[in-house]
Image 1: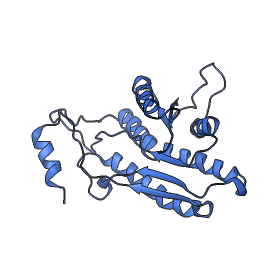
Image 2 (image 1 turned 90 degrees about the vertical axis):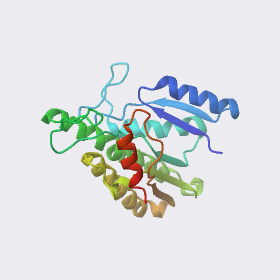
Image 3 (image 1 turned 60 degrees about the horizontal axis):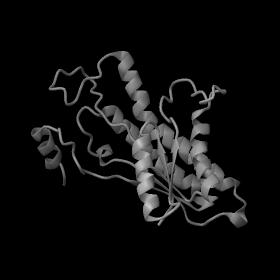
Image 4 (image 1 turned 120 degrees about the vertical axis):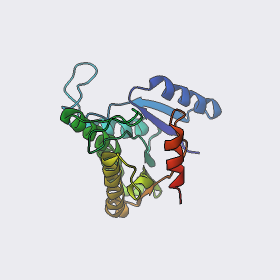
Length: 217
């Protein structure tokens, strides 16, 4: 199996627990790296020691660099992180399960967050990954590089009220197709996985749960 670098933003305990579990099964098979890849519309994040701000691309490059530092290589990139919540076009006073994001500032922040996690951060991670592959001398370069983007079946069957999320996943699909063409000369495969209905939240109202299930082909 692959050794993995687990990225996290705030969930240090969960990431470290998973890494410990994996390392117990196979020593030196997992590391964790913290990085804030959010707030893409805001100013660059300052370094922990108060140093100059670090751009999003440099933060993404740092994740890829961690793999090279620890293992001397990075063969696969999986873009799996995703913000997911409704952003209805019109105000809504429904039961609260799908809260309305009605005011302008909140909607703009939601758009930045949803596009940031689902499309913009993956773009810069792919860019950082590809740069490292391209910078590797041809005689040392591997032949089995792969990028996997987690897209969503909702791009073809949108869920009511999730317009911005659907747009962002559509952007990720476009990134997947475009990157596959651009990175083919480096022998980097780029694929998207669009899962349909899976595990639903325990607190999801039964009527909503059945509505989701009824739409499964």
